[in-house]
Image (cartoon, rainbow, N blue to C red):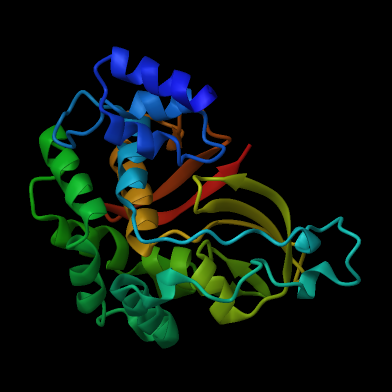
Length: 285
């Protein structure tokens, strides 16, 4: 009855039944939020704000499967050792079979030597619908004047001095860095798994019916890390790049989503002749 009434309302407003099928699968994402997204089909519309474009990118991030979060890994659960519990209730992930994820893992395996080997990864992600949308929007908005491949390469893989060593935005966010016993950066689920640091989670926000934003506490140093889970590398990099591109409009470099309990914070590194990404990660409210 409830579904029939919603279908009637959508058809009355001139929305097709095919769209209703999509709305009916939105899980615990409010229908109001989904209806807001209906008008954001044109990525070249420069009138769209950050949240509208971000929701469109999320819609285009396809081929993910539903994997539930393990409640026993919560820091205050009754588990004997929540740090050792698995985060997800399944070991199978469709993401691991995607070309973009495979290319990301190759770079993670290289660690600090990944710089200079990013071509295959960048080529894989820029050929996705997510990155096509991002490129169309940034170009229409006048935020980029070159092809997206070159922009991502500069923003994420340009080396600069970070304290005692050379670093890059990609190394800091996706690989992570160790300094004086503390882990700097490391805001990527695949990167965290690669490091093998034990952790428990303190907060979880459902991103959509197939992904999450997780705030976790590492056992090592009780450090807090936040990262996306069960999202593609192209979506994460698109979110962060989009927020970084809005840095001229928001002095705090914080990008908020409509109807969602998290936002993205981005830090820039000024090289004099250009600005590149120093760090970017979600923050759970």
